Length: 88
Image 1 (cartoon, rainbow, N blue to C red):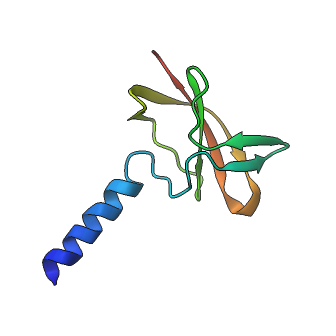
Image 2 (spheres, helix red, strand yellow; image 1 turned 45 degrees about the vertical axis):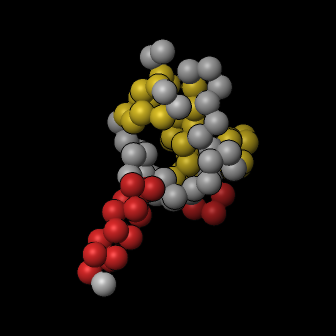
Image 3 (cartoon, rainbow, N blue to C red; image 1 turned 30 degrees about the vertical axis):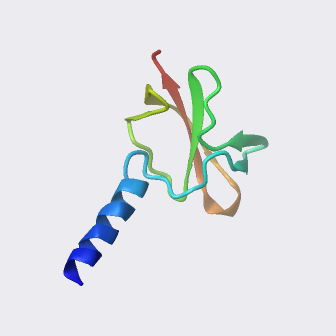
């Protein structure tokens, strides 16, 4: 039982870890007058939507390293969108 609990906890941490988001990739959100698509990179630019106003300084995804660039927008349903850029 304890091993199963640890495995579930580790899986949850891995899923939420990196960029700290529980939102669905590709889902659209209305944030401060504009539509934002969560975790859909366009060139070297990408928005990440979180249920809280806290964003990692950097993370790796889609074969690139992403750096928080700002701004942060308030979205519908109490979510937040942060803008990231990659260097490659």
